Length: 140
Image (cartoon, rainbow, N blue to C red; front, side, top):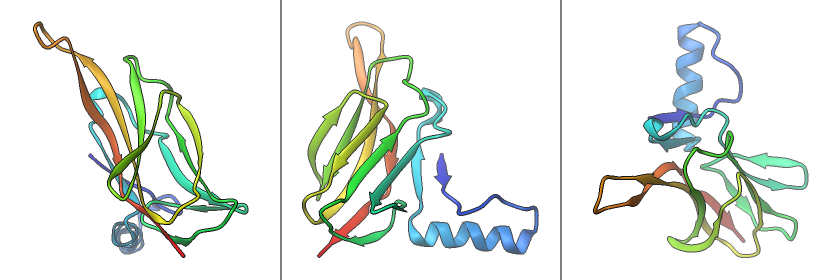
């Protein structure tokens, strides 16, 4: 499922709501989730810098105080891990529902949340992506 991040709630006004959704999609302010693994409602991934929050799809200039914050809506029932990628390469793997990672380099950052799902023998547990974000662009 696509989960769109909106600046305000939908009002029921078709024209206004349509514009909010199209603008969020155009800016890349959404993430993908495999809802059968758990309810992703409440998932948040933002870049924080000097009191400002930047959503997925944002392009921000690198500063010394910048961090990537990830919050899961409660630990999943099964073992999970949050994986942070920079320019397509894994830079950090964390097993904590609330994560703050300092950003010290420019690049394209993404977040993936994986869950170890028990499968019938002989497979045992398999890692399956639960949440996959759009990128954050950190530039000079």
